[in-house]
Image (cartoon, rainbow, N blue to C red; front, side, top):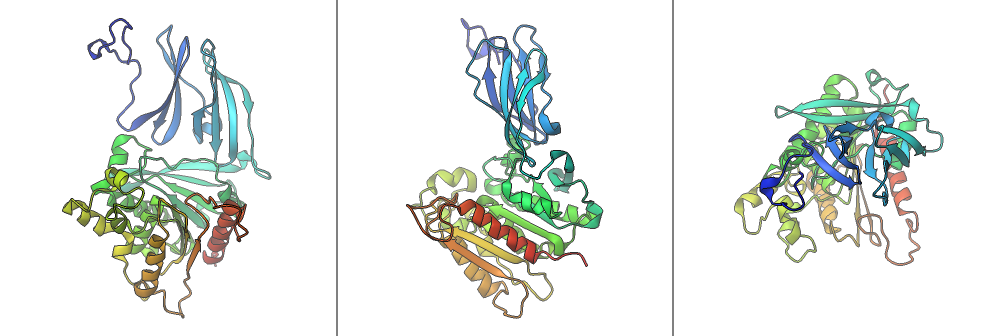
Length: 405
């Protein structure tokens, strides 16, 4: 919006730039003659340059065909026609590119790629999976030599909470899988912010089960397309994403061969009923208030992974599961994944020693939510927590997801 500086009241506001309901403004940078607006459109980045002199809007051509994550870099100079952006993609390290806002063209770039990776060798494909009458975006990342018709091993990632989008950014842990012919699938389920505020609201609070429904719809979409098989499909989620994965495993374990849940929020009901936990009081807007609202209690109880474990095996495929936890984690207390694993062993069929499916629990008591450590430890993950943890997860996926016969 714009208004005269002498008459700034809302009745004098006039639209400067409007976005659709399924879009969201992520950042704004002001310059003397230009305004840069970073927008998320259909889950993908768009950078709009508003010319304050001509009153016109133009879009910048983004690197990697727009299959990237973009954010403003440091732009301290106000009187300039140059804007600097940071970007990364599944096959680009965080890099910098400089644009001329007058011509909407890049004129300088500092691009970095991982060792042994040529970005031109990789395909980033956008699909839509039907779910509840909606279309859930799915981003597929693969080497161009890998045909989806060959049903390659596939790792599906999900988050779907707090309005945080699951970005097509560089993840070093994905590179070893891509080099081995895997497909990485990003499921942009409701609860994330990919398609605006309504998309977020559609997967929070009383609507949280929609995140799980969307994830299963994305998996079903890949399977029905014949692009993978249940024996070659793995799934992973971190923290609140682990809740979505855990709930999906309760409902349709037969879709997946393996699952890895890192510090998963799998007992939301107990957590939200515990006012002494650090984040309970501030999390009610996201999950509800089960201690005071019976409807919120019933809603959380209906999807909480810990409260809805069903026995697997016999007529339902049992995926192998790897679960991690941090003893110093103040966001997801270590007891949450610990008790979920214990109940899976007791009620989920994993106590059967004859089963080929594995249930592995890896608590690291000196770690927090983001692989942080307490003091100078000499434990197995000392100093290399992130690399070692993801090496373990990748080894788990590679050994558990079968090769096509």
